[in-house]
Image 1 (cartoon, rainbow over the protein chains, first blue to last red):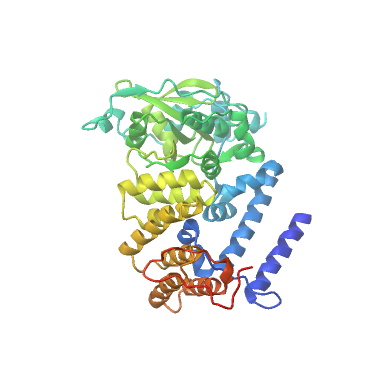
Image 2: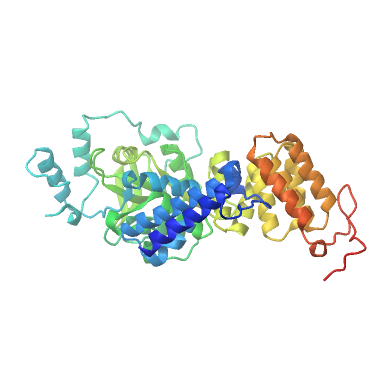
Length: 124
Length: 345
C-alpha cells in the first residue's frame, strides 16, 4: 500500500515537473549515456524517465506478486534495460517461464492422453 | 493429482506423442549431418568438462544458467541464482531475467541465431549453449531450460545437461521439435572480450550497451574494444567506448574516441555534446562551446537533442569559474583565463 502511494506520488511529482507548473522543470544536461541514446530517450527525456519509472514499479509489483523475494527485486530490476522492463511489463503473462523438471516417468504422457480424450481437464 | 506436482520426461514417449499429434513432420528438420557439410565443424563433440547442476524442483532456469556461467569461469552455485531469476508462482524463470542475471556476473549474454548450425558452431568454439525448449505442446506448453553440451552426427544425437540428467540424449529430430516450439531461443555467455562464433554486429554492440547501462563499465569497455577491432566504424561502439573511457576516468582516450566518431559522423550530436562536456571539465570552455555550437548548427530545430545541447551549453557557462579545470592546452583555442576580478574560493 505504501509502495503504491509512493509510486503515485512520484509519478505526480514527475508529471508536475514535466508540465513545468508547480515544480521547476527537470533539467537534462551533461553526458548522454550509450543506452539512453539507443533507446532514444533524448527525444523526450522527461517523458522517457517517467515511463521507465512507471514500468519499473509495475514490474516490481508483478514479480513480487509472482513470489519473487522483495529483498532481491531491486537488483533484479536494475539488471534490466528500460526496453526490457517495458517488454516484461506488457507481456509477462504470455512470456515462457522455463521450469519443468525432467525425470523418468510417463505420468505426463498419460495425463495428456486423458486430457485430449476429454476424460479429465487437468490443465486448469 | 494436480498438474504442478507432475514430473515429466521429454524424450522418447513424449516426443513420439508430440509427433503423432502434430500430424507428423518427418522431414521438417534436416538431419544433423546435412549441416556439417563444407564446414569446419566436426561430426561430433562433447564438452565433457561442462559443470552439472542437478535441478531442484522447477528451477531449471537457475540450474541451466549456473551451468553456462560456471563454464565461463564464474564460481557459482545454482541456489544463489534462484533469488535472481526464479518466479515461484510461475514455477519458472523468464528468458529476459536469465539475460539480465548474466550481466550481473560481468558476462555478456548473447542470443544466438535460432538455427542448429549456430548451436553447433558455438559448441565447436567450446561454449555450451543454453536453450529454451517446449516439452509439451504448442497449446499446452511445458517450458524447460537445458544446456546443449554436445552432438553426435552419425548417431543423430544432441547431448544436454537437463533437469536431473547430467547426460541427457535426445534425437536431433526430437530436440529440434522441442526447440522449434520455443521459437528456437538459445543464448551463450561470453567472457569479457569474447566474440560469438558468427557475431551479429548490431546484436553484439547493443548487448554491450546494456551491460554498460547496468554499471558493468569496465567489462563493457573491454567488449567495446573487441567490437571496434571487428567493426571500427560502428557508431554505437565508438560512442560507448568513449563513454566508458570517460566513466573510468580516462578522459584522454575518451576525447580521442569521441573525435574518431565525429570524423566518421560529423552529425553525431550526442558525441558533440559529450565531447563538449569532457572539454569543459578540462577547463577548455571555448572549445566546448565551439563543439556545442557545431552540434546546434546541424540539429533540426524540432529535434529534442537540441534542448539537451542547449542545456549542456548553459550548464557549462554557468559553472562556477573557479570550479573549472585548468587545462594546459585546449584543442583549437586557448583556455579562458579567470577574469581578474574573480578570486578562487
